[in-house]
Image (cartoon, rainbow, N blue to C red; front, side, top):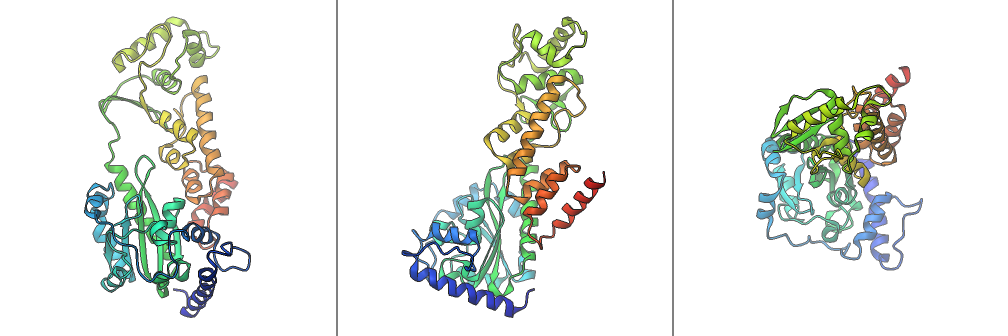
Length: 407
């Protein structure tokens, strides 16, 4: 833990800045110059919050009266219940309180050190407490909700005076579809601040997300094509035996809902190789039987959209949803295929995901993609630029970069 003296000095510096803000909130809100001890994300959060929150308030916002319903309906209920003993143990051992919010920032579960919990209840850091910016101003839970990134808020970085005795570490939690479903947080008294706590929250959030993904149905009823990092066709959850060439055809039809003329599909599959049209017709005919007649006749197209991981990835890339794209990206499209049409789509998807990662300011994105693209020097360098100097994950990225440079 950092020396208390250093934390005290930091707290005093922030308190002085907070006083200047509190007294000039309506006349001089832009105090984010080089001489300010406030981080930019905190400044921006204060500016957003000042319209609805009184910084000198010593009381918390009223609790939501439907917390039982929120908890019952939360997708986090099952994984948090399963991990509750571990979450409580981590919090109690470190003198912290663990909290979970729903997607709106309302606390739905807490556990941990009994003394800290009693103190937390005084500021409504308890089930029903509303911790979004509009109710409680700048705090780590609200920042994690707003930025969709891990967040730390220390002492007088909190806009509301009642929270200046606290330090909070928060990480957003995402469901299998990439949608943010809540925030996981560890909080305690300001003098227990330590940068390693955020790593613990990240690990707990990862465990929760793993359970969410495990519980999600991977093979829903109907036809599903999986072709990222490998290839298989599923019908009502059961594998259907089809040769690689027919998986290639089906992937092309799924990715291009407008369909193909016979000549265009022939070129996309065989290129300039001398393969008769009857071979393609036979493959398509077999696919019709395997999919229950889902392919049209004269123009080869799917009669209805087919569940397909590559199609989902394409939608995520084109909508700018990098988090979902990385969750879906298990590897290149049908990696063993040299079919011209598949090769073109493979390059398109890989470049789309990689470009989104390099444009992202979230180190988690570069870390995730770097694991799947170990030879990509630029991605590893991007991850190192985004990671804080003391982030423990730098060791893994540095090792990946070293290996990539030697290859």
